[in-house]
Amino acid sequence: MDYQKVENPPAGVLSSRKRVIERQALPDELADRLRDMITRGELRPGARINTPRLCARFGVSRTPLREALKILSTEGLVQLMPNRSAVVQRVTDDVINELIPIVGALAALAGRIACARISDDALAELEAMHELMLQHLDQRDEPSYMEVESEFVATVFAVAGNKTLKKCHETLVMKLQWQSACHHSVAEWKQTFEVQKQLLQALQLRDGELWALVAYRQVLHRAAILLRGTELPPSGKQGRQVSAT
Image (cartoon, rainbow, N blue to C red; front, side, top):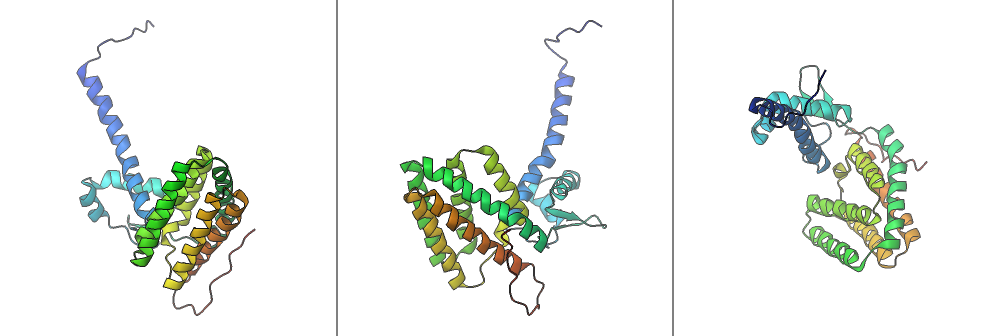
């Protein structure tokens, strides 16, 4: 068969190809948005996903939204129910204890690399984030605090400059639904901020070993809050111990 390059394909071919690409891209885009809502804590673990409301919010039909939910289901973020509804997957104790040591190791490694190569400009950016976290703490605005805290960590991974390391960390943090680990008291929140201050000091000193030690401690603390959140009230039990191995 003689294959020839078509310089000017019929308009119908182009429009058809374009429509296929758009149909395939829409569920992926919706999955990204829903993933972000879960990560930010807007959709909480165990919460039923209101499909009609989301369709109205994003201006889409049910079909691409259902496809997006299937994508999140394969990632373990959403549970599809028999009646065609969906809920945000709850994180189990087993998942937390399995992933936390890995997350801690990744955060420690990223910090070690970042401390060795951080620039004055990047350090100034992190210092500004730290001040913003303090403002959110004073204002008792925990969602905004945790959002900036996530940006702080993301910036450290960006400074480390290892895309694979960054992607692995983002994937695991997403599975753990990090943003759902809310503090139950101001004292506990202030304690977390003090740890955050030590992380900044490690960067200022370019001390990778100090960062690794403090970062792993911070991850274990967040895990303890996550584990406490998996207890169904009233439990009458103390928080579970986090496995570090």
